[in-house]
Length: 528
Image (cartoon, rainbow, N blue to C red; front, side):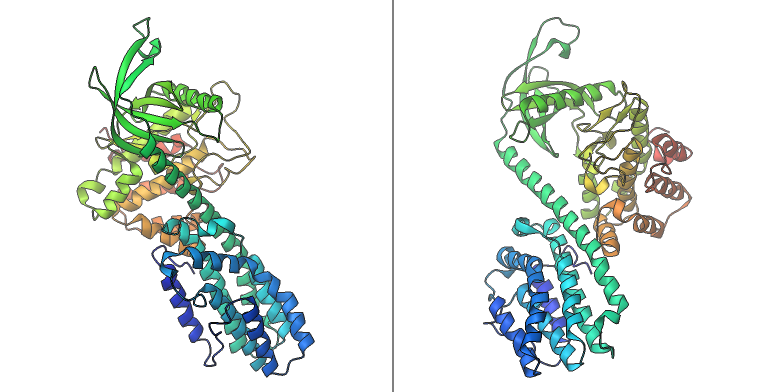
């Protein structure tokens, strides 16, 4: 039932109106004066008046039904006010009108088929009550496909199930719609679908808000064309403080909590990557400083050819900066997108194969060093000179001084799309959660390496389970991987990925086991 990410609100509206026209030859639509509560009530009562239904019976149906429409109508109203392609259209020609029309048709057909009216009202009410509260966020980011997509899925699912109710009434000789067990099961299952759509919408809203904030801070970020005094540990051979001058260079990107840019040290001409963490109202300066120090300490503990290197950090007015290497050409998410837009050129996708083993080797090393990354995703994997680097250990956990490598917290760490099933609030998680996240990333890398688009992969998952979150649709991910043509070498890789993304953490590969699984195939490593 997914509307698909490219379908506009207007095209979705026209599609559903066309379906409604095919439902019945009788004109049950409302005129332009009736697309409001009072108009709907008048039209609703007119249907029953034509069939001489007792007024008290109609009022009982209204009492059971009318109060359940609020959530779907709030969504319809927000869409009408915010969707750019619906602006300027008549107030009656919108999704609210479609919803009213569907209910009018349902009861008109129920009367024609002499069906029991109370069960019809109850079934529609059950559907209405399963629609999630989207609230004030429904009108935000109207130009963002990723934000609007889950809302379109909610509307599409609601309308299609309402149409299914009408079809059941039209095609059945039964007098009680509650005898249609398949329909009732679909309505019951809609609660799970709606919940996933609402969750996807929350994720996309948060991502869009973070991107918006990062864009604003990028426009306002201070330059570094000034002197910065750094502590002596920057140059361990010296016992005094040294002064260096960094000059801002090209913009590298943004993450969940920080911006990144290339900076050049004026006296030497050397270039570095600078991670710029802003101090905002969400956390105290002391808390942010503690997190920065933790990230620096964790990353300085790790020395691996495929893990980014942190050199030092320093404090600025309103921010903290971490100076690190390498200065990436781009991150993995950008590279994979570029492969798609570039038409999957062989010289691009051939670079991917050695990265699987290199990244697994880096993760295995981190885990053996008692460090859990906790936020592996494509944007946290840097690419420099065709070599991958595991980066951004801002959420990392160091277990070196603890008796267990299992942690839990009130807020799960990691990006929702790649988060392992066990990473839920107040539930233990371990290093195999990292393996799951990297396995999800590997499934995307493998998809692109075989010349298939990530958008197609996402749509495949969304169509099956109405979610792009990997943990929600693991059978579909495995089916997708299995459906891509492969040779003996890629067979080993697919088998490894499947072992990395098993839902049960105790059945899932460790990073070392996954690494050993790949080692016989040297094509998956950068060093022969």
